[in-house]
Length: 147
Image 1: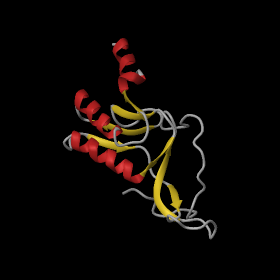
Image 2: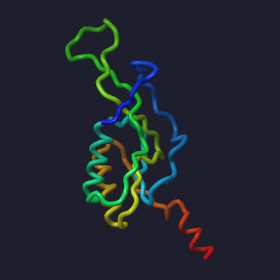
Image 3: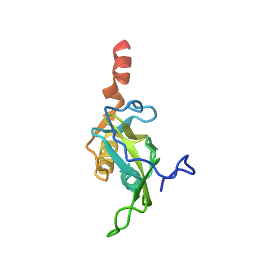
């Protein structure tokens, strides 16, 4: 599972996810991508579950890029513990995902397999998502008009 090798601080504040994604909102590697439509923290386990679902559906053909990394430590205290005595231990790692962020990209498989793989991967994530393609971005569309 994904987690940072080392961090500057052991524990972090909860924070809020405001506005839309500052970067990572366009396809950079593959032809198909899974775009987030709402703000949420996505755990390392959820990222791994989605990755497995996508690669299984693709039958290990093509290539998958994971565009998010869980770098936020999430701490919690055990059940039925009294208030005080400091902050709890780090339980898991999460990635803050803003609306518009591309989370996964895939390439090297046909259109129908790519869409089905991303749909199955999206089912493992706690956010509403949208499948985007290079055609949506207008990259391939502009080339065909020029020809």
